[in-house]
Image (cartoon, rainbow, N blue to C red; front, side, top):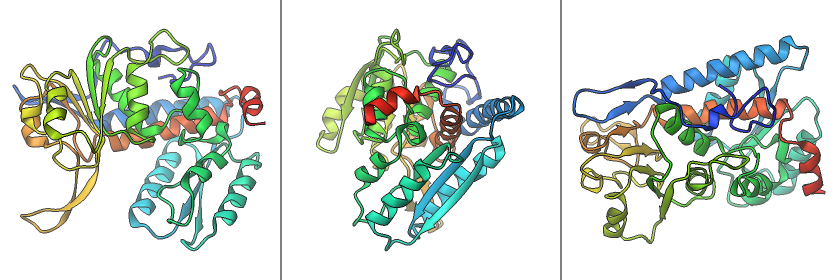
Amino acid sequence: MATALCPLRTLGCAALRPHGRRLHLSAPRNDAVVISGRKLARQIRQEARHEVEQWVAAGNKRPHLSVVLVGENPASHSYVLNKTKAAADVGISSETILRPASVSEEELLDLIGKLNNDANVDGLLVQLPLPEHIDERKICNAVTPDKDVDGFHVINVGRMCLDQYSMLPATPWGVWEIIKRTGIPTLGKNVVVAGRSKNVGMPIAMLLHTDGRHERPGGDATVTISHRYTPKEQLKQHTIRADIVVAAAGIPNLITADMIKPEGAAVIDVGITRVQDPVTAKSKLVGDVDFEGVKKKASYITPVPGGVGPMTVAMLMKNTIIAAKKLLKPKELEALTA
């Protein structure tokens, strides 16, 4: 499949139009169709692998991803390992650059500057969260926009909001791909996005509501965004009318079966929280959706784990290829950052 940016005629924009077929779906009768993010991610990684092979066979340098990892956060180390494993799987070379939690902001900015100027580095990301003494926004904006595979630089965010070519944030793009590849219609549909974070909730809302005729086509949906100050009963008033519910608030069991309309809705669970299982006393990952309850009411649902998470990593690989191919009109971006 082509990338979502489509700046070259060879890539096309088919990837941004709803697919007519439904993929990787399985469900018992009367329950929601459970969308396997793992299977969709494997498909996308296979596409990425083929794209890398063609790129290298044409005489180009193999794409390279540099990941900066600060501190000893176990979850961050696990996420980075998943990213570098995926890179190896699709033929992208990668490196993880470790820095202690005590690293100064100035030292980190200096490292990013060197990686920005390193011609061998195509994609660059700094794993979040960072220690409290470091300004994450300053760090995200320090990564040059055409290497910004996280899509967090203010220029990439701004261009996304203007429906222009940009490096899309991997998790929102993964959600968008799940919806499109599953064949869930968005044009004119009601969507609720629970969560307004700048890296997830807001970009998801932008991708779903923007004009499908623009440079970076959107979903043409009517989108409502809720947040921490939205009363639960008010949230329910919105979700009960929604055709698509995207839960990205980081609150376990925020979305329950009584909040889904009787005729069913597509429920995409972006939340991920580690909790203790009351039966086994072991820790487990849960989403923002009461999966067992909602799947009896919804038409489609993504699980946690195995839903959006694998798609995030897959889309990061796509962004690295985009960066390697220099598809983001670097001269234009240079002019914007000059």
